[in-house]
Image (cartoon, rainbow, N blue to C red):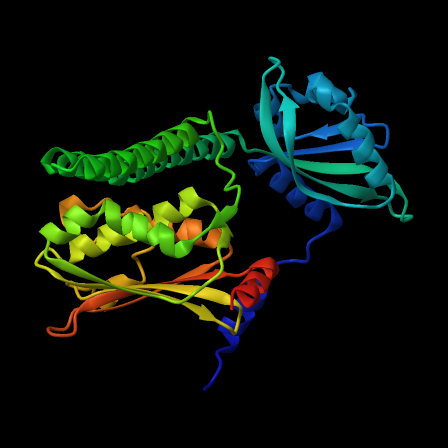
Length: 382
């Protein structure tokens, strides 16, 4: 390739000249004046030395009004201590980055700022003051506040849905037990049904008190016989199981009583049994197996149905709040509540499922750890 000497000369003539110190300072000044952030400098006593256009716009003071005054006029009374800390750090040569705080406008309005402060060093290497960049973040803070409010409203909605779901299960049981009591001619049976209904209503009251904040259920543990508790839940749902044509098969190993919250375990088992009934609307077999796992020391409570099953794509979502595979009849709360309560007790939960014809069904396994005293109790029982 042959270069044209004439063109080469013209390129040399268009080459930018070296930037002089004066031009460099002018460029820096232009940058400072064109930025949207307040750029301010002050001496080591906090006296303002320079003030750009953005500072005038953000704080409301013109340069003529504010230069020579203390930076403290921009700080709310209850935050005056911040300036002492800032000056100490600057004198020590430290830099303060993106510190969020409140400052004052000329009209007395407080607003949120993010400030970055760096030491000003002269040619001799001596710290003579500080440069400050302040960004008005009021709009961002307002958006954050709105987001927090939205989250609170969403949380309130989730709590309301959870309470409604958790109350609905025992109320269904109460109606079922009252129906059975009306149909029975045996005084002993009627009393048994009414006693179970009373127990379910107490469960409703406990959930309501907890939700309203009058009673905080801290899960105070008591010794609970898991087998008896599951038998109680199955008795409550007996009518629904029979009417749906569901046969129940239980296999219980001899285990120690667990130190746990009876109410929370009732919620766990009730939700799983209710889900199994919904999955076997055309009948089926519901198997419950409780056994001891020695590595690690825990018990496994397994619930298996041969209902419609859950698709593989949905299995990872079943423990998420408000996810349901039941269409309009589901709330998507039950398994989410189960997982929260199991993990609260230090346990874990697993699920497998199939939708294949002939082998469809869902198995839920709950693993609850045994305490040292429960392990000792188990050895004594055996």
